[in-house]
Length: 570
Image 1 (spheres, rainbow, N blue to C red):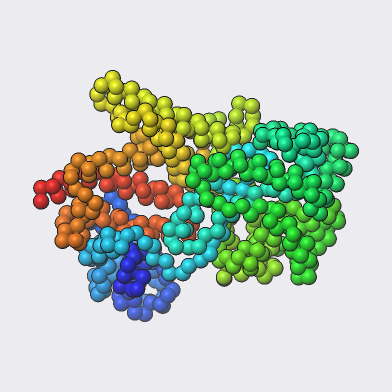
Image 2 (cartoon, rainbow, N blue to C red):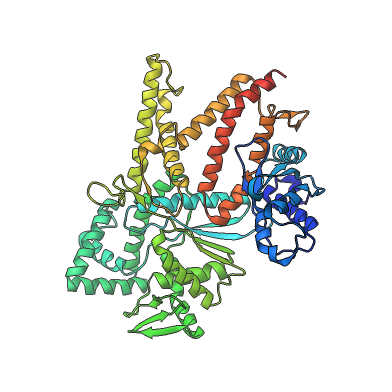
């Protein structure tokens, strides 16, 4: 066992792959080494085997014309040869041939016991071999606007991938790239000073500020005098005029107070590095790109053409101003060279894929991003849809406010709790009921409502659109947070009533020992956790973790009571 495995659970799949590769090399010594990959598939619904592999099929099809298999004439015969080849390790107990050349793999009982004892004695630790510094750019609301349903996926997915990376031991920089700079602030400040000249003592609410923004935009589009004056305010703000900066700070702080309320309810930890953070270095970013010789003039704008892409990067607009391309290029350089990050994740909807592809390619052209050393990835996601399968909007046709989603989920959870409480009071049989006191209703409803929204989001395929459905989210019988929470409470209740404490259920003589087939099955499936976590961060697919959790919980509930009875009778 290597040094990493002494105090941590290991990647079972990596160990199995290594063992199978050794079998292949022993069975077929003429096969070119390192010329093939071992593919594994998990088996969770059988007691005797944990994995299967198509390795025999793959290598036979890949090398059958190279005369490396001797007299063996099919993938089935190659599989039989591999199954009968012995390897001296403590990982695999048995390999058997099944139909069409697939091999099933049974783990060694001693290996399962050793890994479970590592977990019981040292806690759950991830076997990190290389530590990275990862920046996760997520949530990113716009100043002077309320957060809405369009921020839901980025915020929840972003917080979750940060937590998973941190569990692995990675250094994570949580970045809130808020929209707090640009030409829109010229018109907003202009209109604010006209409508709220006493804004320092009579601050508008965020809702009023949003209405102010809409009015300013309408005025900007149809009033030339207002437009010119607004453009002048942009120049003043960029020149750090005290009046403009003061108004800008007030607008930002008012917005910040509102979106922080949402972050607190969701338990989101994030640090603000908005567009304004990079404002002072934008001129030098443009000059550096020009010095690199990759900038062209196109109808007065400064652009960078990316090979194979029709739309170029525009780092300076024809009016001399900067835009998202400029800011995101500055952010890329800052994160890679100044912050020394190894991996950069950007969470926005899939519609922005092309924009970030340009940024990643632009960073490569500048030499900041070397794909052999750094990773830049767009963790894109689909849309949240309403019951009509269109963009989720309120009755007024606007995007549904984020805060309203949380409040509605809490209210529905509260009604469920009150209903169960009433069933208890009425003495109705065959109901779930609740042991909560009325004083606990509000707190619990908040937790259930938030968990329901989070889990419903996380279990989705990230790339796909999905329909936002409160009834499905709060269903206690489906694949939901409510079901997971109730199942956990049920297991804890069974343990409490049994009188067995802590890990007494699993330990004999202070060590875990397999004494029952179902117990072995549960333990073997638990060992998949490390590989699931690794696949989640490799593929940025958090729904795989949700699938694993609900699958394992169902397995646990199915076999838990029988195992408990067995231990009580020992």
